[in-house]
Length: 470
Image (cartoon, helix red, strand yellow):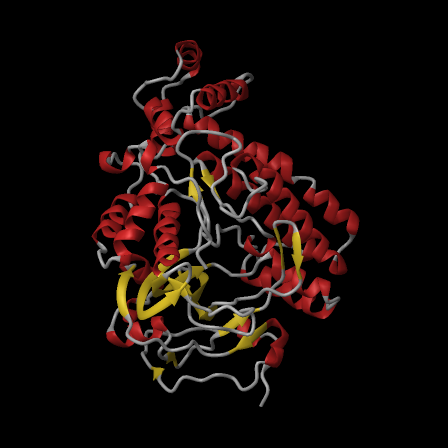
């Protein structure tokens, strides 16, 4: 029997994994066929553990997956009997260029689990081809898998809304990219994998019924207090304003802010060519494919606004134009408020006063003119070390009694610096996971001093470009 999207018969693996503690829900899979493609992951040759996030697994009640049987599930060699794996359909604007059909080309949503009243998606990345693979092999190599595992978990420890990593599994297979590379599968967890591009997929097809279903699903799943499509749009605008402000406050550059990479849940999603700045520059770009600097550090608020305009346009079949415009227009103000709060905290100020914005801007100007390290300059303020005496005098005059406490909570001592991430990937390709484990352990407590990982790169260690790695 033909499956959705002309895929043919639904692919089935022979083995099912039964365990009383693995109880996947499948709410998205219950939506009509045009929302997704139903298929099982492609088995791999010889799976083995690279990493397993035990504390997070305990929170999700998924520790049973840290077993021989669980390894087979997370590698794609077997399917839990409560799971209905699907590849989700979505569209997107990639660097401003419209792609009417993208979808999960190398990922499968296994199902959902509930923990502490929150429902989470559990997804495999690198699990084989799907109807959306567009001639790709549907696989991933160890580099991007460990990169996303490390950076997404670092973001969580930094207090940034993000997808999480549950596990990384080596496949025992060779993946051909620019060279033969070891294959791997990532298990990613998110409050949802719904994207702006999910709504665009149905809007471009003039499928109002699907948009109504999708909107109702998103509200029930993520924003239950939202009042209809307008309430959903308002919630997403607010969440994205807060999210991008947090990115900016830690020097994070997403690198590929396409509409298919904008999560409706307000989480950071898809850690492809992302990077953290070393020396501060508003126009800093790392992504090798961002030749025009569209997604540069300083452009991220503008692009977030642009993406939300696309979301609003996708919702127009189910809401009024005037309401959509009014809500989207609030982004700039909401972002400015969130960014000011975040940046003031970094200099120890809790309650804004007149002139505080200028104080922040003066510091950033000094940092850019002198190519100062973003993370370390702010961290040094915790110890009263300033980059400029005149600025320092004005800053000290503004501080209150709680300044030290505020800064300690806002200024990390370490971030996943690009050269360190590249080092752990190189070691892992050569079979050595110790560098990954040591850096990962340190990043669990980013506000604690870890001298080994706080040092900026030497000139010969600088990473000039990052890659999607798909």
